[in-house]
Image 1 (tube, rainbow, N blue to C red):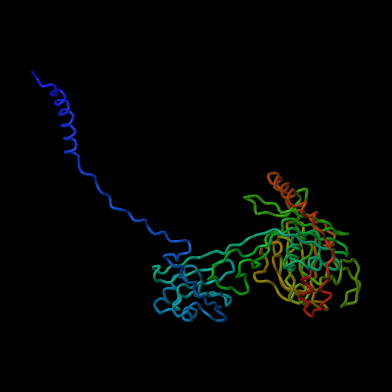
Image 2 (image 1 turned 90 degrees about the horizontal axis):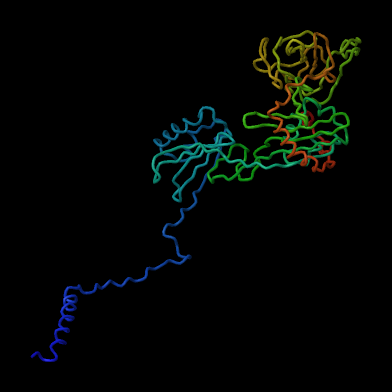
Length: 453
């Protein structure tokens, strides 16, 4: 007979043996090394890589008779490097025709060693030659300058001239000339203006954008961010006068060069300019009977005499072809131009002709053809200007000026957009009388009078 505790013993053995086997076969626990927290630098800590020190920049001009070779010597380049710089620069610049206004900027490291050479031979770009060193081989890159454009407005009331009316505007002489160029077919701004007439203009001003610290100078061109670069386009303008009125809107699209049109799409550009030069006054008008100042005989004066300083450029009033350029009797040195089959213009008493002006040469409107003089039967320097229509002299100041082609239909929406944007701007310009600085400060320079518009 089995003992009474035997069943319990067998049960204990059945449980203990598997547990012991598991414990025997299981590996001992792995002890992971304690990881110390890493040190995190504070925001104020000095960065691992320190910023490089700014380079010292030496600037100078090539000057009269100077060369890039001389500039390299002044920069302290070794002879071999000197030759390499000239070779790589010649791929981008014509080193034989560098202007004395060309600027050089030499960048040097803290030890005084040249790092780069910048050459500015134009106002809107410069060439940077990076010298070999830690950065690698010699290399050159042509870098354009960034230009920023903003829109401004100007206006004034005339007391003596358009130049006076715009006199308080920055760079008013440039703006006045651009304004005159737009209206030169319809308004003679040397004759037509009357006191009380108003001028208004919406235009673009271009200034220099961000610049690198090694930008060289170029003459007196812009060199600092924000400096004036030039005028952009005139976007809209008006002339409101007692004897002349005109409005102009700039119209262009992506594939169109652009031009000025009135509110109805008629071009301001006409076949003939109002006058062929910037002059001081009309010394003698068109007449069928005038006493000649030299012969004292009463004869027709089939033209306009424009008094101007000797040497004042004379321009063609319309596209045409040179019929003759030479001595023309009482007119002295003169140019005759044919414009199609209907018109001929004559420019007399010149002291000389522009380069390339000879019989058979095609001429563009506004192209300089000669210079004011007093050759022939003349009492002083002036231009005699005649217009012949079908062989008969007509008054240039009263002629029916043929227009060029009107605005294409496909561009009418662009005119509408220009009017929508700039008509309210023109209307908002408050034209105030300006001080006539020209009369307040007399000058002995006759060219200032000529350019007064």
